[in-house]
Length: 147
Image (cartoon, rainbow, N blue to C red; front, side, top):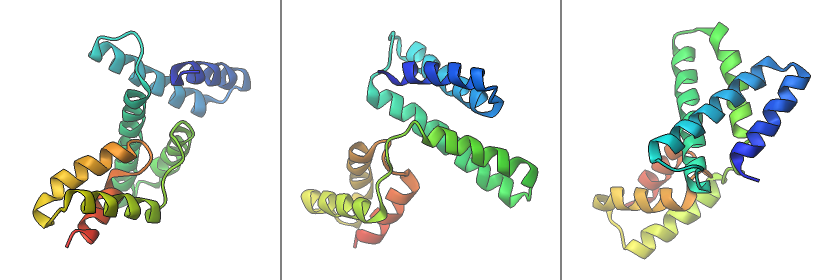
């Protein structure tokens, strides 16, 4: 079952349960997936593209959450945390920091990378962990492990 099909089924379920918060987020995710398909000129997205869209949606919400917390807008923080939890349900299980470290170290060793190769390492690692790890965590671990 594709992600779009799963979202459609979950949307129907949210309608039946009258869960407006979940329904709104699912509709936004479906729209983002459909817009990406139109942008790419395809009928349906492959799994990698779906993960890219979901990752983008999650990142936008996490960035907004940080800004709202900085601005002390507590009225917006709680609803956004709920949205983030809903988006995370559709992403694959996230890698732990140790697992990310292992992948980063393997990549550094394979590329014989130095500090100057930061971009190469990041690009290679992000390809391997697409949708399974936060980019900020990966960046932090690459900075730490590159000597």
